[in-house]
Length: 220
Image (cartoon, rainbow, N blue to C red; front, top):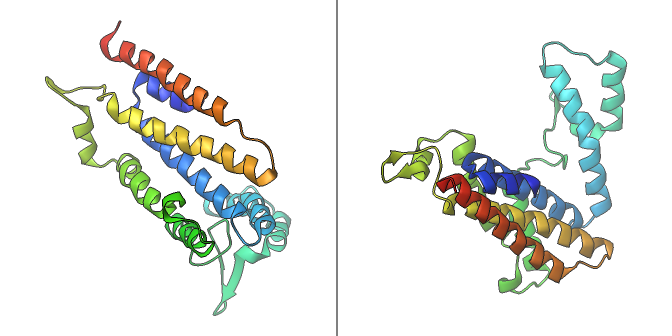
């Protein structure tokens, strides 16, 4: 939320896109854990995957810092990620320890679970659709696409400040996913979610950010 406010206040378009992508992936991971038939297992794997990431980073760094004993400890504690096939050892690279698995596949499964649970079409999360929408926008910045220059096009030519509508849209979506994370977590753990306070907070957030953005754009 703080990052979104800073991005909106200073019309930081590229950073807004990266924040949106991160917020969406956090939301998708959370949903995949709590909607899974075995949420405790998924939560446990999500937490333990940090050890696998440490292992992989150290192995691939070229300057390993972990000892052989530490490697063995991680391999034993996180054995579902370490597989041997045709005499060759390899490490699964997704936190679910499932293969094949990706964020795209995860969002598709989330939609399928909703459909199987009988959730009405208009009430479904439509995560797979959101995935394409978010990544269609955010990945252009991540990969340095040439098309993003159009978002900085001003009447006088290419400027350093984008049309305020572009970062506003990205930050509104990012804020929505962040708040949905809180809402889903409250629902899962039986904690009351303050709907009214949520609405007031979001409106206040963007009212203040719009004021800052106007100052950034026009200097007054």
